[in-house]
Image 1 (cartoon, helix red, strand yellow):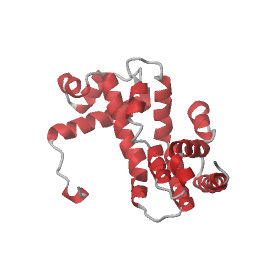
Image 2: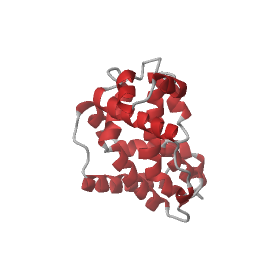
Image 3: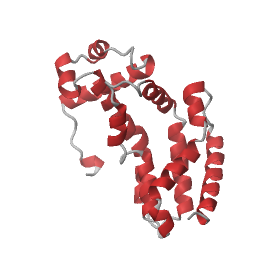
Image 4: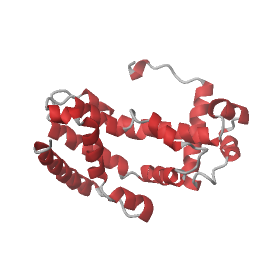
Length: 210
């Protein structure tokens, strides 16, 4: 549906959006454990009943916040790339790289990653199930679909491996250093140089890949 034709949100929908926004700010500021549902509800002017009805508990609200973050900061940044036809693989990979690096050098992305890593072994949040559910919505899947459509049979038949490998090459060790060591993220110029190097290395490697 065209964005200009979308129906306006109802009051209840607007309230839920506000709850998720306040929750995101609280999770980013205080971390998962220190975030309190009472404080979120107090700031939004909502009620416990509405939160429990839609999210069940804090774990459910956290996963809803992750869904929103994935949609707004990951998928929208790369969605336009799905519509590009007859584009050279190297050009596609370069555009993808710039968008990907911008996402993973974002302060909010790094902060969210810290929270996720801190809750990996929390059975209540059940993040392993969330990751499995989100598998076909995350950014790597957009790249995987591009590989699947390639005329080269070797590339198309190894789409999943190539997409995960390429994204791992893009992240390198800088993302983990940003998450765990508070290392300063790449500048825009550094992102461009890094993207060019990885695309060149990757595409030259594909030539001899079997």
